[in-house]
Length: 237
Image (tube, rainbow, N blue to C red):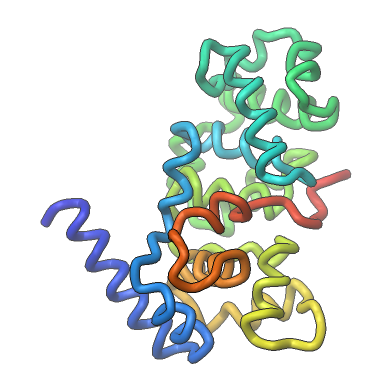
């Protein structure tokens, strides 16, 4: 079985599960038969776990367009690619500040890069950890909260059962899709998402698409604008 056919089979199975588990998602799925939940990632540069965390930290409290502008300036500093931990540590922090990163974000990224460079953390080991353990390891670093790690899990590791309850855009999407009269709390989002297991990442993608793109529209635009975009969360100190 090829990678494409395996992915198609997985999507079919996941969509069937979500349709049966949640009538709201059944409607969203049926309204978007050609939706590709990972199409938006083609607009991002290749990222390992460190690169995805750099992307997420950069995007804290920023819109996606602002994040991408800053990311492009960072790439320009490193010959057109995202820096490795060693490369980031070697550059003058003032140049990262000129690229648009705040001093707090620079400190967070240098702390993470230092831990990866001196062996306190290992990307291969981290990438193999279960979600909860990975969250525990990375949120111990000041400036990295659950939203940052959860986004990196989706982007770099392709984790299939991730939900971002602290993402303001997702909370608004849940409010709209479920016709709530209030903005759901993080716990309410988690409670709603429990029925989506083990496909919470896919369900989240459908909710973003429904909130920011009419049914039948090209399937890339909504997530390119909104997915794993910092709305309002506690990664700030």
